[in-house]
Image 1 (spheres, rainbow, N blue to C red):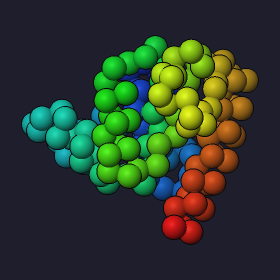
Image 2: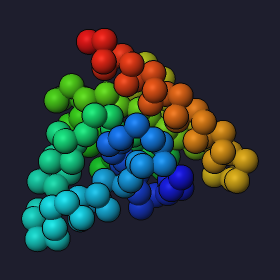
Image 3: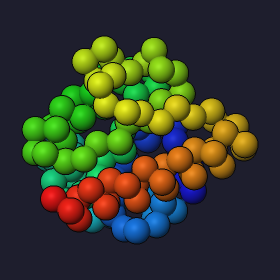
Length: 127
């Protein structure tokens, strides 16, 4: 599993395995190329994804903007954070996964994320 860090805050889920999730910017660089506008790439990545995984840790304004874009087009968003205080008040109605960036914490995080993704995929399949 790829560790989450401040440079890779918004993630896309594209297949059935947690180990296959990749950072938005890495995926878009491979799929679209380096010559397009960043927000165009972000928009394309969000629209092509089934599930958006957004790390609220450190309150990155870009991540919150991108969460808003995902909500606008009706995408399922899974919030993750190292600190519950980093989840804004108006997003706290959404369940989020808290994680610790330690070897043990990341193992638990991978399990929690896998279970959440499976649940969201079941919900998407029944709608």
